[in-house]
Image (cartoon, rainbow, N blue to C red; front, side):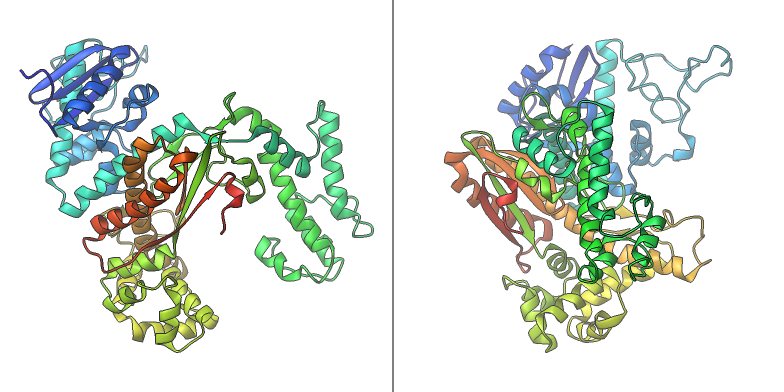
Length: 565
């Protein structure tokens, strides 16, 4: 047995709150959880393996918590989500899918019910066997109750290794590459939860006070601040003092009393009436302040920003639909008004990079439309599209976005006809996805993610309601682009993570198509260069060519709010 795994080998990880095991065909280790980070660091340095785990959370959390940097990974849960869609996955389900077993045959987990006299799937099985006679994993295999010995931990890690091998055998080169980047994204999510987003607490408190008033010491003071916010709106309309601004029906009545009739009170509807009456801009400003006061106020600050002034929340590498990253505690929907509070620590800066016109560029790549790919060579993709369609740039932009989002009415519908003539390959790609969605059939992203269209549209079955079917089609039309863009973004983020670690850089936020990288000030310029190179490299690997050009708007700032766009 070699003292360490072979270079580049796959090494599986299994953990409990007290013990851990590592396994590869030529090498294994088991010991206390406290010793795991050191062993992993030694193996990483000597062998640069591909680490395998059932799920990054919780399997690799102890290693990440210790600050060990892992270069390559295979996340079984993310590989399953990619191939089979959805979000919910257990080791047993991933194993069954990888082994070609019927998931309906998954054995039920044993219960601690005092009156549960019925036999379970493991009653007549070897108590140390990971795999049952049926071929399925034992249902209690990953629990601390079963993983009581080092031999069982090693067997659980070995099962993970086998599952990863089986998953990989069923994937093509592009899907395999996507699993690698999705696994790296899952690892990044654990690091994001560990590191947090740097916050200037004093500035955050100042911004919250500007919207919600001073920090209240009593419920009465909080109620007084709430009434003061309301009065800034209600005082503009005589007789409106009893209107509840949190009740949409009463807000519609308030607007009607000044001659404004609206179908609903959504922001985009009210925006059109800003100049009609002063109550409309006041109401929109009230909504922004109310959101700060109720969702991002002092309670939010106290609960989620730690003593080290870092905002933390749980992250997920996949939203269960098209595959976008998600986060909790405001990390993905922080109001723009609070962005000045996101600030680099002393001696550091933020490198902010935002992918430009990402979805139309992705459409050019995934559809293989050579003419549309040619348009991506320009910094502004919409300019050559406008020239080709012989329309103004705003019209060209509307046409491209309408094609991806399924809008057919108004100016968008008129512009689409020209777009379909100019770029028939790209439009046909979207049309095929739309047709599949209408039929309730799943679609796949460029990297191979399965996106289901037969669920999530209420109780209406496929074919029962043409409007619902059209909604399915529009969802599928956008999912094949949005999901593919998410794959490219994660491949880019993973490459940035890998290529800037020696600079002391850490990714602190992944927001849709935007990265924030916290880096020592002396390495800012080099980080900007590497972020751009990472996009070029990730896009070349992801697309398999260099026909489509992807661009990023990158800047060095001290506060997030200083970035343009």
